[in-house]
Length: 470
Image (cartoon, rainbow, N blue to C red; front, side, top):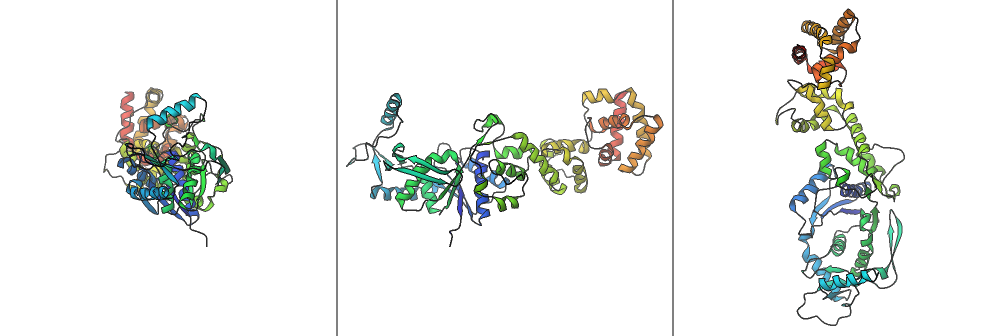
């Protein structure tokens, strides 16, 4: 019987959930779900100077927002120090680790000397053969690495990666202050949590041979490894804040849909034919490492923005009406707690969804539907609200006051009557009306807009425009 797939996402809570971490979490999640396996969340918080509870909550918030529900955890490494110490004692007793009495200052001097001589700075192993303790010195503990041969990583993405053991030094697994180090704790955790596949960024690849030897020393089978290529900015440098927002929740605040971000992140390094847009179910069904590329992926904000617009277009108006409310509050279109007619909001969104790339854009566009008054774009006002349009606006206002059917059909008939009477094109009337009612020159069809704005607000805005012209 094949062992059930068990994977983990193990962020360090030293910041928010960023794009790279979110993609790693996502690949773990999809692999687990594709194989009916278990997705575990582990918080690697042993860096006490930088890890905070606030960042832990921020990571959980980001994962919840993009819909990555975990099956076990979150487990915190700081709750497991006794476990790590017991494993260290085991390695010491079996002669697979040893006490090191070299001070930080001595190690730094040797590092500088090696660099000056053009050598790779590595620990020289001088404490490995010590027979007894050094009085008055609190030691660290180092792991005894093999000094010859090769370590081969059979990577599910990169294939065989070979490391010469002569290039690997005896590394510290327990600091002198009794805190364990990353390369040790990660193996102990993976052993205890029965992790079958370690899926992480390729910046961890150089740690893998060290970890493989700890697995072997503890007598456990090595999991399968899959190292994901890096995400680069448009300048091919490692993705950072200067390339734009890198925090997952920053995209939430800008009005991106979580499914759009998920879709985009999966496609950073993974492909399935020519298909661009995937449902969550399709991602789970099709995901495999065979379709993950070895080359670094380039983050393209414009592509993400386009993809988000597609998700807005294809989302139900009812769903969008729920999602846009916080953004209407944020951009001060409505007050906190203010209620809008649900059926009316759905109709309004239907006119704007294909013009909106984000929920923020959608909220701003809804502004001229909801506001009591609109502010004019100065250039639009100067061009269209003038003496040439005044008489047309006055006549339209009078006509609209009299019509009983304030619908697109009724409005179109009123416009047609006036344009035919004066021998002008529809645009000669529609653009001044558009500026009067929306404040600008771009909007959905004018009859749609007026129907959504409603008769009362339309008449008030036409009156204001006429007064503005004077």
